[in-house]
Image 1 (spheres, rainbow, N blue to C red):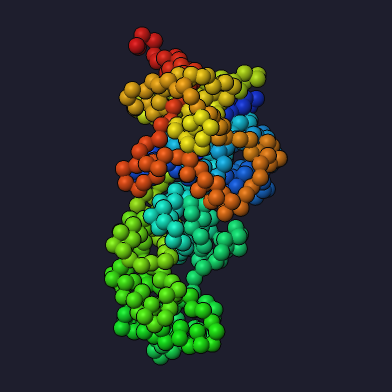
Image 2: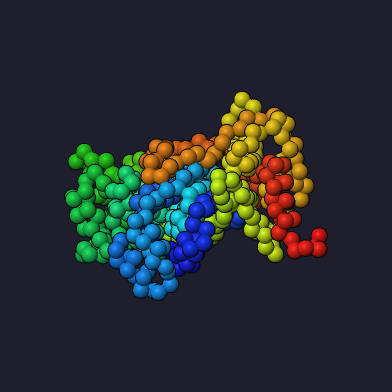
Amino acid sequence: MLTDLYEFSMANGYRQTIDQEQGIFDVFFRKIPDNGSFVICAGLEQVVDILRNFHFSKADVNYLRSLKLFKENFLDYLSDFHFDCQVSAIPEGTPVFPREPLLTIQGPLLQTQLFETIVLNIMNHQSLIATKARRITFAAGDRPVMEFGARRAQGPDSATFGARAAVIGGCTSTSNVLAAEKFGIPAAGTMAHAWVEAFPDELTAFEKWAAVYPDNASLLVDTYDVLKSGVPNAIKVFTELKRAGHKPVGIRIDSGDITQLARGARKMLDDAGFPDAKITASNALDEHVIQALLNEGAPLDNFGVGEKLITSQTSPVLSGVYKLAAIVSDGKVIPKIKVSASREKLTLPGKKQIYRLYKPNTNEAFADVIALSDEVLDRPMEVIKADPLAVERHQSIYNYDAKPLQELVLDGKSVKTDQPNVFAIQKRAKQMLKELPIATQRLFNPDFYPVYMTSRLAALQEKLIEADKPAGVK
């Protein structure tokens, strides 16, 4: 029921008119958040779970009946709904590019239409957050980034599945206990300012914390004054913990001039004999702030990133779309295309596969090519840039190795691939990022990675464009 009303209206219409046809729909995007060069694909596991268990309760059907919009044969179909589609998709964690089908679903047209809203809702959100997390963790380098955004997320599901996506994008842990439990993510976090304020003074607050958590003494030092009271009081507590045989974790700074405060704190901790005590920074961080802090030489060991990660604040929308690519009638695939006044919104017709092209005998990717699913790639291969606004679109590619990206993940209710945990997906993402040109990964003015379509797909697209023109128009 988490869908738009017009999906039901169209599905009911299909039931009354072309009920025997199958649809082939693609999920793709055209624009990359934050002016980056790629998106980290995420959310497939949840899409698979939703589709396998897609059903309508008696109360759902009764509500739809109450709208007085739908025929009884359609409502009967929903009452006895059985998922009967095939889903092919690019695995989670893969860097993907504009116009590439991240997911393709084929099945009864009525069914495939109903899935549009929920599939986009899941994949747009998780891919957006995974992509933002990749940017933030890239800026942090080898320093761990903890996801701290639950209280600022736009609802419980955004917090929980956003934490999952953040780990796919490179985060090491989350403060969200539900996400930690559901997805096997380390739970992270210690105290807030309220703990310090609840006691008569800061030193007492630190001492009481250390008494309860002697092996998890990470102390928040900016409630009053970082360098005049917070760090000196932390050092007093660390000294007592060390005498008792415990190893202090470190401190967290959540406000102020973090570079200067971290420098002062680092010196004080080192001079007191705690060179291994970590300094964590939080407070409205994103990739730009983290990069600036590190460029200034801030001696930081960890980052806690909240609202700007969990909402992708600087670029809060991934505008993925779900477009009809073909109708299957009597076993024949009939390609379809959207032609609008804006050439940028042209779609790619037919059932397709995406290939990542590598320099021969290496793991160095240099381009992707979108082909029709029944094509065998030529050598040499004539290709055309997939971006309809590109100039110098034609290219010949001579030497390459090709790896298909889409794979069958769901056939009816049968899952055809493993569903790895989030850290396995994160590992895949890191490996596939290593295969891309390094210039595509920088945060500012990245190089754009070329995405082509085969000459056969391009010819099909042009044929359908011409066929769509009114008579007498050239």
